[in-house]
Amino acid sequence: MIKVPNVVITSLGMWSYFEWFILGLQQLDEKGEISLKFELPFHFYLITILKNSVLLKLLAKCIRRFCKSSQSYNLDGYIEIHKDGQIIRNRFTIDCADSPFSYDSKKLQDVAVYFKMQCPKDLRAEKFKISKNVSIPWIDHGKYCRGMGLINFQAVFKKNSYKIKPLMVGPRELALGLNFQLLQNAYDEMTSCRKLKKSKRFMCYFGNSKGPVPVKTLKESPDFNSESELLGFFGSLVTHPNEKRAVVSSILGKFADSDARVIREGNSDSKSYELSAKPIPLKEFPSHVANFEYNFNVSGYRLSIPNRFIDSFIVGTTVVTDELSVRWYLPFSEHEVIETIPMGYERLSEVNFGKFESIVSNLPETNPEKIVEEYEKKWKPELVARYMVRAVLESM
Image (cartoon, rainbow, N blue to C red; front, side):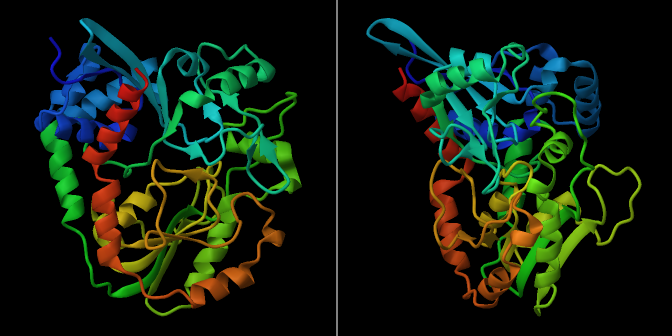
């Protein structure tokens, strides 16, 4: 007899994207709220038990090179409970695709709950708006139905969009694998970096000053998951977010106690480049962010929310951003996030940077204690996992 829900993970895809949720489920398992199991191919199961960093690195390289399933954007699983003398099982998936408009058509049809890490604010819209002049259709990134065509997928999406639930985005990496102790230790290291008294004012940490080189396509509809094709298709109607990031960095550089970095000049897909600012090692990033009152964001990569949001909240730092097009499973408070003006893919010439600089000049002091308090009530791994389990159980 099932006394607590069985949560079973059946595929991991790009597993590093899902560490936050696996850790949360492991924490619930430790507390006896669920029974967590892995029904995975042996090489993927090893990721959940190995602790040796050398072996994990070798295994990860082999999986990424030789296993096509590792390229999947989705983690799959099911939850089963005992009800009225029967075992009831509902399937779920977590979609980590950075494009808010991109979904796996087959899984969207097959599962009871489809968790979207980059979830649009409005799933009822006919298309996903990336600027005031440009919208992109809902598209299929699944390997099963790529021949369906956009018209058919719009029908699939409209019929099944009620299954889509917003989730959130964790840090870039907690640990090399998914062993509970490795993940918990890495998480504890992040929380130990908190500073409730900030020594500096503003920071930004952006990768490139430009997007990829635009690529013209002869196809009637480009691959919208490819930013180079997206830029080539829409041409002068859009400007890549990286160009706004470069301007934001230069504005922040005018203020005292700021650290405004764009790591590389030039196109993001260039193989030859020079570093224009010092990169921060991943292990040192939480303690770096913790020094600042504000961490700045410009929505990029098809307007997704990046890791810097959770990187900031966990150490008590506020995020200042352009207008957001996606949401997390709970709303952001005024202590956590301040939205300013539209940027994203808007034409560079149409972005009101004067207004942005005025907003930045008049930002109040932050409240790190309140940010950490809200983090502890909203975004901790076990809380997110509890939300996921509840959503699947409610679908039964």
